[in-house]
Image 1 (cartoon, rainbow, N blue to C red):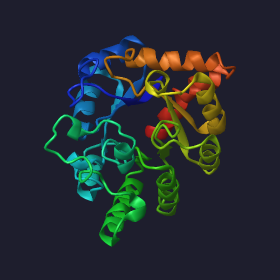
Image 2: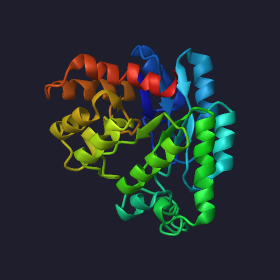
Image 3: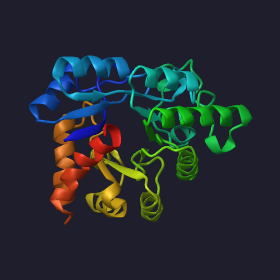
Length: 277
């Protein structure tokens, strides 16, 4: 299996293990690799070091939050030129994160203003911001990298998908679209999956998303069809170890009557194709 969404230490938040400890878990579980995600910095260097030491396909990328300069073409160029494969639009600094009251860096450092440090909504971007977004998308297309929606709103996800297609991006992943942010409906998810977007469901949603159920996640999985990506989004001290979390997600969706071989492919063949092939 190949996990496209995992967190480890060092991080500003407490994690269940350091990079090498998490990587050992994946080796022991027989995974082929994983994508290392950090909300505050590029993970490319860390991922490459893990790949060299473990022999797994460990991939890094960057989330376009304030510590990376927001939606910043220079950060994206540096990430991609150094071998990064994944670019997430804003996550913890997205305006949706603030409006939903979800964790921000300013929770740890109160001298940082929560509202002014949000990255602005892409649908309200000025011309310079639109130019930066266009260049970021062009860079992702040039490197045939993966564009993830992060914690943008549903309307922004749809707008970004159209922009990505216009600029030749073929690897487009809706980041946990049924999570609290962006809280897209099953119909909205099905519509974008039908147009070619990959759809992520994460094990994190089972344990930490209020009112989320296995039955609701099964509906999202059916809407995604052959564009489904299952991931752990684990690494929190109050979650299982990431490989275990992903396996449990598969088991619990199987109990909802979904085909186990399809679910296995959604945690192995589909994510590898999205990120590496």
